[in-house]
Amino acid sequence: MLDHHSRFVWYELSTTNVGAAKTFYSEVMGWGTRDMSMPGIAYTAFTVRNAPACGLINLSEEATDNGAKSRWIGYVGVADVDATVGRIKQLGGLVLVPPTDVFDFSRFAIVADPQMATFALVTWLRSGQESQIERDAPGRVGWHELLTADPTAALVFYSALFGWQRGEATVGATGTYQLFSAGQHTIGGIATKLETVSIPSWVYYFRVDDIDAAAKRVRAGGGQVLEGPTEVPGGSWVLQCIDPRQAIFALVGKRKYKALVRFRPFGSSDKALRAK
Image (cartoon, rainbow, N blue to C red; front, side, top):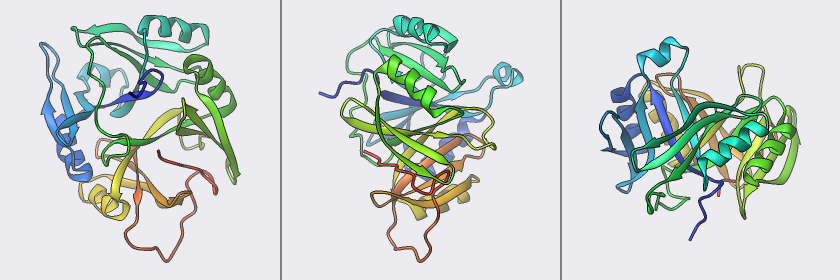
């Protein structure tokens, strides 16, 4: 059985328009939806093969008044949220939302690394809450990318916190692209953020069957393709996108038809995105 500790296990979109997000992502990704609301908490799960794959929650007016914007956030599974929060403080990170129980379902916290890239922690309080969908199924996240000011310092932080290991690195026109792994699985890469990226952030790449068809669906739904399709090692292609409410996300998949023109990878001419 896959060990979910110290891996990304859940992804959640906080948005200013839940209804519009349901329509957009259902059309782009082919996701279904399921109401998973609890008393006082309106919550929707996007589903793959009728199983929950990621979440959707409304961004409150109070949050937007305080500067919050629509965004995707990834949850890393840990054995003890409180202990991990304490470790984050020791390593120079910040706690944005302290450890909190969601009834008897889960305990979570929202945190930031020392360079202010935001992510979340979760401990399932009931067994069997982990997604049973195959990791490589369309609609699942296939890659995690951290855009940060100091990739070396970032990897030191996450290695100390989660035990992530340094993988191969490639050097391109804009710097080094550093792969990292959790256990035996390469799950992402770390790159120096461009000046146009205001703060360090995590970007999540969702799997699709046909990258060109997905690009058309993004545009048809009112989203934008910021970069791509871009070919990456292994024969996959990627898109960087924003949804109609300006939440950043990315897609990874194959091309059904061989392109006549090759695009240079976003951020590095040798970016090594190996979605596993």
